[in-house]
Length: 369
Image (tube, rainbow, N blue to C red; front, side):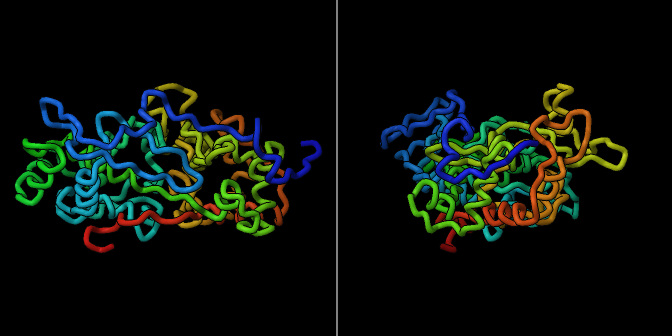
């Protein structure tokens, strides 16, 4: 693979650092704080728009024009996020699979649903999900709003019809009042539930990690010597080639391109995929076995890894990619065997551990700040 000279962190900017582009269709800039207008159906928030401050290392939060965040919608979404009434047997909440105590994951290989049902994929973190143009491992939802309602009706997850969920929430006088404060007069609707949950989820931001303080804050003592070596490997296309998919740029780093790649994860002993991933949505042959690039932020706390939870540790992940993934007809061209020493691999793990950022405030169960 030729000579592979390590680059210093000062050399990683420029063409070697890919940029994750947020679609123009999403409104990036916040509206001026003020009282919003409602649609005839009363589906838009009516309170004053709140600015969600992005921490060091992250860009401005994309906000759809039809769902401006307000104190009322965020508080309502937070309450709903921890409410088990959204599940069939009143046993699970959104937080059951996205626990704030473990970085909004569940720590399981595969998520558990109501009645002991086992899901088919690993629960990804919700931290920084606001930046994804598509949601879920297979990208089947185009917004956080759309994403929020899917697990409720999924028979392997909360397994409750949207109609029943709306009815249960609407039957509660406290909720009716909260919805009126957030959206104006009118009944509880699925659309209002989706918008409230999405507004809360947009506050789940984590940045200001040791890496951020080193790279964007100018603190050259924020990373260990090993992590600095790991960063050089991470961005070097001839050594780690990690930043090709886990993107960074000069102003911020999302550590994901938001796209779908086949790494060979999930291939069975017969060389076939038990989960076709993105192909199920697009029916494009090249998408067989392709899954969305997960963010690497807080990755040290969000194992096990891959869409099927098949890799237990960060070392396992580094070894998997160093070995070139699992061979299959649709393996992404960027996934190739890497010549990495034991020290190189340890340095990469050290760097990945430096991506653990601050947890957002006031995102736990209501009343437990």
